[in-house]
Length: 108
Image 1 (cartoon, rainbow, N blue to C red):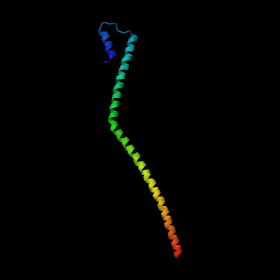
Image 2 (image 1 turned 180 degrees about the vertical axis):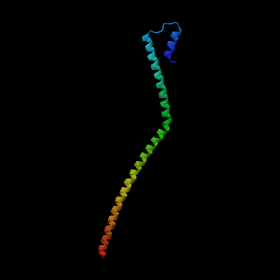
Image 3 (image 1 turned 180 degrees about the horizontal axis):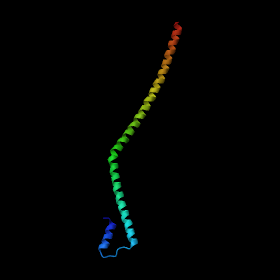
Image 4 (image 1 turned 30 degrees about the horizontal axis):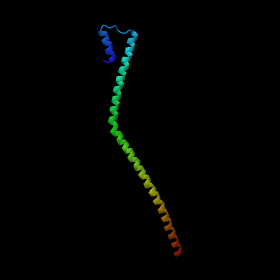
């Protein structure tokens, strides 16, 4: 029983005069607001519990994102090294090819 309903019940049991119609409507509105606040409080409590239950999963996702970021950064570094190596081998192949062509030209 809400506080407002308890107050109405108490007034009706004691020989006090019941509130006039306008006051009664106001008390009914207050009683509805009180019930709504209680429901809201229950809903927020359920939501808090759900979030707390999901926290390990959220932390795990965050960890995976951080690890993925580190892997991407490391991969970029490897790609730069591969590109530098490939560019260097092209020069070496060009030089070897040129030397070979000159040697063939000179010996033929």
